[in-house]
Length: 182
Image 1: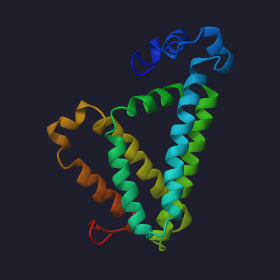
Image 2: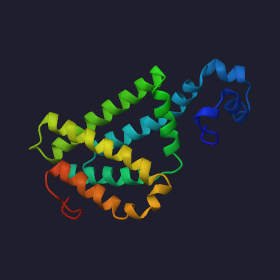
Image 3: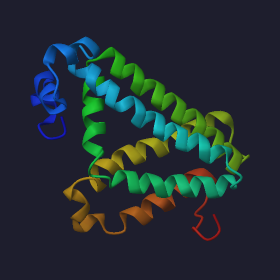
């Protein structure tokens, strides 16, 4: 799928790469979205497990947020996995099961991140923390479009990562916080 793109991605090509018959593949994965869901489920679980592990660690909420922001920047530049996410989101627009996976992923991510934001800044209410979580997630989603492609080499991208971190910190703490004091 990553080699040929979502339009040319076929069960026949997957079966050929896996060294099995198309009918055997279709027994377990009857459609292209079913194959993608099987690939994405462990990827999504890994992300959520890492977030939950960070939340359960002994690190301060601020340190945990900083670690999540740093990981978000690394993930946004991961040119190997970004196309996989793009394919998944494109299938989610037409496949109800992919859409459900996407929605559950965002619901859990938003909820857990909102809890962390509230722990880092108790002055934030539950609704405000959820809004900030959605804004941060949206910013990271947008970053993948710019940092995970050749666009990251454009002149206007200079300083983008630092601006992302400053903006994210400002959203969470309500003022500009540099990395040393965070």
